[in-house]
Image (cartoon, rainbow, N blue to C red):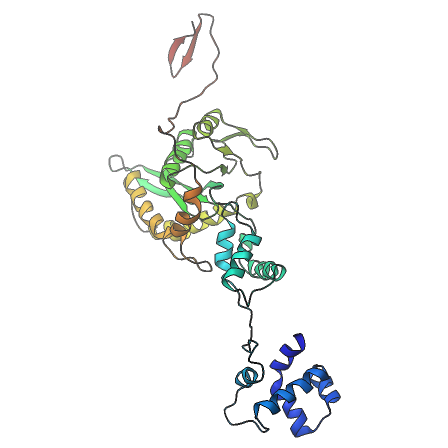
Length: 353
């Protein structure tokens, strides 16, 4: 079979060497890198088909090959590649393996299918040709990456004329790249945690893991192996039954999705708002929400569909449902009991008895 396939791609050259140049079978074998036996069989098929040299006008090599070898697929590239982008998206689903996708591919292409090793090799070649940021594999519903944009947006008070800089909170789901963004006045603990609540309501479910940056509002002690979360942040995690694994300090590759997501928000949203003047946080968030919707419906460049379609297909079915009641912020503060058995909180005294 290998000699036959080689001969099928070099039929015209073999015939030219035989009938025009007059070479022997051995010489043709050396020139065309085809065995003498395959050459002899090809010439016998040519004689049996009634075709003579020179070939009839308009006789293409694929047509000639189909006449000499009707039982074989004469088209170049007989093995057909699957849609590697679709394969890549399917691998993000829980429980889906390369072997399972290869079996489904073989069922669709029973005659012209790659072996499993070739299937994996060609997928890896396609995968490495994509952006370097696609190195990490993200399972559906597994991780949500969280960070703040560097640039801020000015908000002017219509009463006093005071200008405050709004911070932009960004969250990106790992598998689908589904993006959430909103503005808050600060990065303080209440704003940080309540942005989490609104983010989870926006996606309509709870992922398994939250991956924030080592923001002081969320992480009391940044550590490479055992970070210490803020107690309020820990309460939020317990309420939603989600794990919080902060990225390591000075390791942006631990959260590449949100690093790219922040860059996209800055270019796709903040850059479009640079000429607008906002007089309230609600007005700014209304514009941001409109542009976030457009961003999530913007087609991917190298993958099929868009963020919203990928979210509906991948992340949404894998997210756990939200609890009945949303989490409510509670201020936690360490206090010292005075000699009168009272503690002070915001200039008020409370008895501990």
